[in-house]
Image (cartoon, rainbow, N blue to C red; front, top):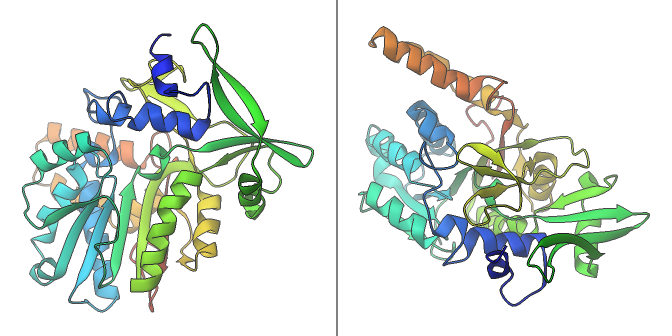
Length: 354
């Protein structure tokens, strides 16, 4: 209970997104700034850690994207939220097999956590990789942004609608340092934001990624100016249903939302219908939303796995099969995880998207 006060700093009441920003990103006690959240010893495992084939597929997708836009001499690849660096590390190895592509690309890693940057820099020895806190240094050439489980980690706002008014959920600290939820009338600007999206019109309980949209706004402006695309893979839904999707995960198990603050990961499911509407409002085109299963299978992950399995022992084949199950099965990540592509290119024949 005593530690609860630390996350409120000098405030007694905070909106959900500001409170979670303190819990997750505070430089001293935040979850992402004080421990390694990934892998078996962490709290969750991401697709690149399940199988390097996932990362190889992303590499192939980026290369085919470069080819479809005319093999530009200078172009930029930006990973959003690189985690422990596993994905980009495999990408770098894969890129080396394609000399023409490899000699023309620039790689940037967008990471705000100094702690995770240190972990990434230990894993990634490539001198051509640059870490950035914003996108101002990217001034020329097409841009390819991609992120795996990037958007779900950005804190959201929550509102409830009563008749025709909106009320924002806040967390408040009582005299015993216990956290309680309260609702305050939403500001005029937040009300305008909600009303501007058709996806949210009929909902009584609303999750709105204001901070996430602020980040994506900078990205869409860069894509619109320089041409390019953004590929996001995350867990979420397409049909909003008035549910609170905030969840806390600790040591690979669900954790009570407001317990173990700073020691457990807290995320929200991504509203992909809302995300698509955002991209369209910001002058980008979008392809049909795919499940992770559809995208990876369209990109030939099973064919790649079959080729590799021919050179493997039986135990290795079994392990590979189980990893493919984790990525593709509707019981695991296959349907829960979605893939969205927004772009501004003259051509729109992107691999994986029919």
